Length: 290
Image 1 (cartoon, rainbow, N blue to C red):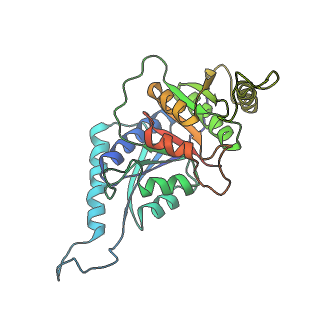
Image 2 (image 1 turned 180 degrees about the vertical axis):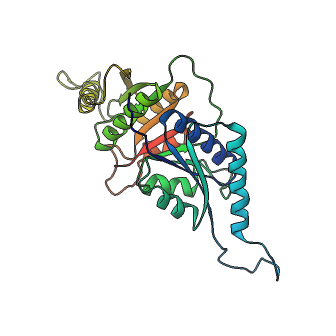
Image 3 (image 1 turned 30 degrees about the vertical axis):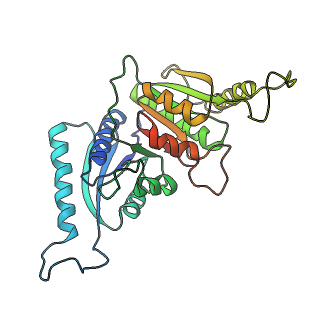
């Protein structure tokens, strides 16, 4: 079992339902990981004052202080907590404040949408910006109800042979060891649509064979982290990566994946699979950026 502290977990809190769920999830993780928690509420002055009455005493800092008090009360009502927790306000846009706070952090936790988000959106601008630019792994919490898992909780990690997914696997194994969870490695495969597997002579190649080699290489690369303290299993599943991982998330405590896979264009900051999983997974999603 690791004796060093996990590091700092930064949480964005704006009083919304999603950010409340994100804060509670961060506290649970921090208690298990022996991590510090930095709860940050952002504020800034409006660009225009045209809508404010003359002589108004309102200030965005006052609003932020009230939201910070909500976080403090939430901590008191759900405590005591093993983790060391601090709450603070910071001036600036939510995305800029959180990205700055995440420098040197082990994990950034955000709700999928904040108070300013449109209800129809599954992923807000702040969480998207954090996924794209954060200097550390980002946990997206959608605030969806998740049934209590039976047995040892599972961290599902998607592996496709990319450097990003290799880093995601290392994060998953390290986190699972600290929390007493197990790890389920999933590598997907599917036949290219342009090929007919029944007619073409593919005696020496198949996508399933490639997937098996990919999974084996990824596990070998993380061999220094895998020991008797953490159970790691590996599954090959036929289907599209996003659909397979979202389905696997139904029974998972956490879904971990890289921000881009082998199929992504190098110029993209976040790939389609990580976007889809962050939007539709049935459990919190950690996106690991290299």
